[in-house]
Length: 152
Image (cartoon, rainbow, N blue to C red; front, side, top):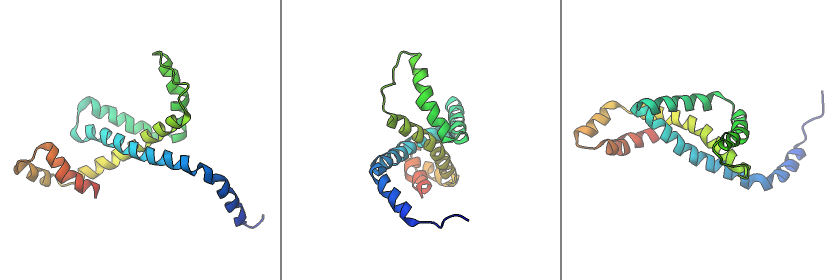
């Protein structure tokens, strides 16, 4: 039946992994922050139905939500430099960390875009119309009425 679980292995490897905690937290924090920005920018064309940008955001979301992140890492680390070589841009000396952060940011941004779009569309349309009726601009209605409720 095998050997019983030994907790000492966990502590042994935890100590070995502690030096990499800083870089892991850097990747996570920067990917989340950039993913929120990307997600917001991708959600806007779908919310306001901008024809060409809406189609682009649908393809973007479909690609990044439909492919595994490991495949995306391979595509960005190996494929992007080859594509950029066609326009005489050499990114072969760029550290791997930037490709990892870029890939995770774009991957997270696709999920954030859907979450933001869903949250904003859940706000009652009557509240937005009431904001317009009291003289608010589109930006004011979005930032004062829709966004606080969507964030909640």
